[in-house]
Image (cartoon, rainbow, N blue to C red; front, side):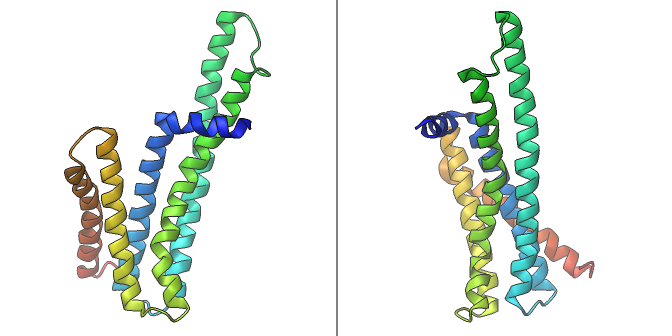
Length: 193
């Protein structure tokens, strides 16, 4: 099956790995910002948190897919045109030409779906709360705990790729969540939110 071959190639593509980490990171921090802001504003309905986070996650996903597809397709098409110029041959309908299209699309999916998937994981405590199986306050704490855990795991992944100290790398990434929390807390103290 040809799609499996492309998925294997995608796994080896550094750009896909970078997009996965960067956009998962973006999704985590966006959800964290929304969750902390909702907590400080005294929201007492899980549904409002879910809808707010989903709205942001969907916007990130659409933006990620759209922008990555356009950018990747343009860059890969440019490289293909350069190859065609040297070979004096149109490669659009060849395996190489099809790969440009398919890889651009797959990378765009990684770029857009990674923050959406991560966001769904992070709002799961609120979904559980919405069904009455978890108190809303515990949903806030659970979501923030998940945020820190996922940031740490993303840091470990980055550390593994870079062959660095995994714990240090995980802590560095988790610190971004702490920074977001401190900034939102400071804004709340100034009564900005």
